[in-house]
Amino acid sequence: MSHQKPHVSPSFSYETLEETLDIKPKGAQLHIGIPKEIAFQENRIALTPDAVSLLVSNGHQVTIEHNAGEAAHFADRDYSEAGARIVYEREEVYKAPILVKSAPVIEEELPFLQLNQMIISPIHLSVLKAELLQKMMEKRITAISFENLKDDSGAYPIVRSMSEIAGSAVMLIAAQYLGSANHGKGVLLGGVCGIAPTKVIIIGAGIVGEYAARAAIALGASVKVFDNSVYRLKRLQNNIGHRIWTSVLEPRMLAKQLKTCEVAVGALSSEAGRTPIVVTEEMVGNMRPGSVVIDVSIDRGGCFETSEITTHQFPVYTKYGVIHYCVPNIPSGFARTASQAISNVLTPLLLEAGDDGGFERMVWHQVHLRSGIYMFKGALTNFYLSERFHLKYTDLNLLIASQR
Image 1 (cartoon, one colour):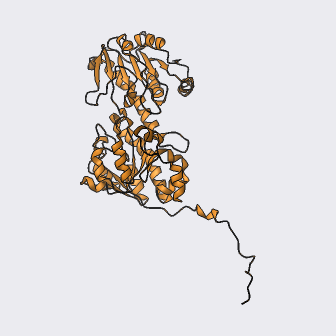
Image 2 (cartoon, rainbow, N blue to C red):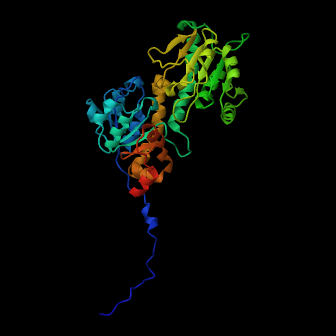
Image 3 (tube, helix red, strand yellow):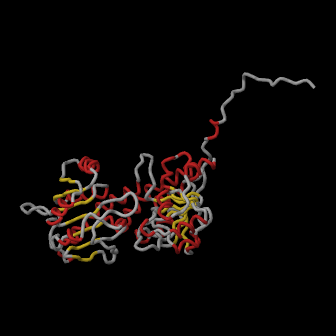
């Protein structure tokens, strides 16, 4: 038998195989479920009727539990007209492969979760328990958290919007408790010509601090901002566009300013764990009676020593004659605006996941989304959570690479 030489024709074009690996697959149809939140004080919903209508017209399916949007004043009718399917049995909505929630997963929901489900929701670190994570891991769940979700510019869009809402709301709340109607001092926040302006102290120059400062300045108050980071103070000044009084967090200076202010806002954020307490009980004791403390960082433990969690029903208490407002989840008090803000971030994300043929494929292309995933097919991929709860940590990049 004679060996024939392979015939090579110049009309063939040769191409390296790597090139063909990354062809975008055809789009996938997503099935998204939105349960009604039963978590304490959660009034938001993660997708608005407009968003649902956009998803449905792109070929996706949306199932919504009866009255899920009620607290944000979105009616079932709005959703059914947008093309969603309204269901009355709670477990029915959990059958959707992708769950989108505006509150964290809570224990009551665990029995409803499906194997290999995908969940997009916030995680509230202060109330998270190891057992909850373990149960989710057993069900091989993939989970994205609002808090760690990054966009392609490296910012955290949902956290940013919620912080903007909280910051702007802070001054409206302060104005309410300074007024006579709520047995406040009867002071107009800001003031008028010929009367010294109200004095507002803001501790923390992040987004909450910046938006609180903006609102206070717009009302005519005199604003002083404290933060340990000179960079953040500079950024706040540049964003607001004119010079305001700023200082690093120096206890004596802080105590002196607090003595004479009408409103003190705690807006310190901490990357992980509890916020540091920077205002001692003694400092609050020296504040003017009738002044108002709003501790926005109460979600993470609060930065005033006298802060204790309050509710939207009973938002304030008085200590040393000072009115304390310590409601966690302030954006939930402005549920419609907050829902629209969350929806604006999640809708393009879901649409893109559909175009890419599902989230797993999308995460391969969009590296910035990986920071938002704290669990991938049952493996815990968030280092901070694994440290805190002594659970096994798995590197997400390795997981994704090994699946290709």
